Image (cartoon, rainbow, N blue to C red):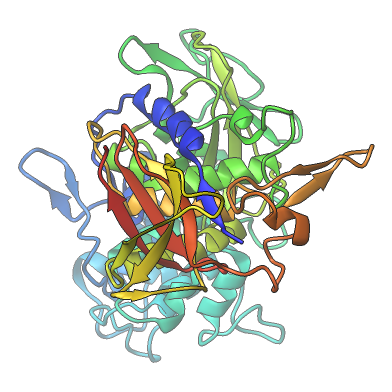
Length: 517
């Protein structure tokens, strides 16, 4: 039976939503730069100088030496001034000059050791294992004694386990100052050993980080509203700013005060209503509404990246949208849903009690959509000249058309989806193909038939199939559900169309562009 996925109506909805939005041109920052900027704003990280405009230079691509790594750690811990004012001695023969008070202080405080009893290795390159060991010691963990928490050789694995570092550091190569910035930022949200208090909270209590917003909705000096937590710290309420050109928004730096691991904000281009059909039934039996919103946000991540929304200086609060605050691993740190109307907001709530697994959904999503760029232009698809009408010889507006791949007719192993597009809009073909794959494999039912309480059967997956196919097969995962050589195709359309081809298990094969007419 023919399996053609038609979603012209869906495309029109998405197209309309996209058309209604306008986007600023804000330069994107990478994770390392964002971490360095964040720490710099807190006064915990300094550059190696400034450029000719006075902007700090961090040299994030350069490898730090052991002395630099130690100094950056002491700054992170808020101990720099104490180290400079100290008069400790040390046993190292290779230490002198500007770094001596730092190294002497850290050695006597038990924060660092030398590479031998008489040599610190100040100019040796710092490794990931070394810096993470520094940070773990600062958090209260130990790598010595009768019951050590970790070993130097296993420091990275231990850091990955507690969420301090990413698994990519396990290779321990090309360690840079940018890595130092990211690890330092992550450390701020880490609880101290045997404590509920985070490093960030301790630095605030010690007065190292100043000008922290008041809690419980109090006003700062001058009457300005500030963010505040609820009693169990599961809801953060943040004051909202407003301008005519930007609408409602909040500062990115404000969120990063409270979510140090935040790397970006993801925006879906649709509201919850998009995932409910006209009969009030959720369009997908695969995922919850919140999961569908997150996957939809993933499908528009490149789109919003291009205009600086995901990691720009402000977080825009477009009406009737659910925003996801995520870390570098796409773990969801907080969720925020804006009101349906365009009312000017005074404040907005971010919820930290999240019931969905963002990292898993991101992995599921990319397992499918990454096949688009991987297989782009590998196969040449075309429609055969034959037009088949199984019911009569009368002229029709639609016929069954057959498909060739790389010059040969193909009879099984493929499915297709047809989309119309407006040629006057800026189109990014790979992104459109990725969103087409997302609609098929995430925003539709696995089941092909739904029965109500009265036993009435209705088709529940309009994307995957048509007609009598549903009478025989219950699920798209049914191994006996065959692919087909041909599909119904309308001869004329006012808009250009793209036919996307893929396998049942989510591998993109190619596309055909059909002009309007």
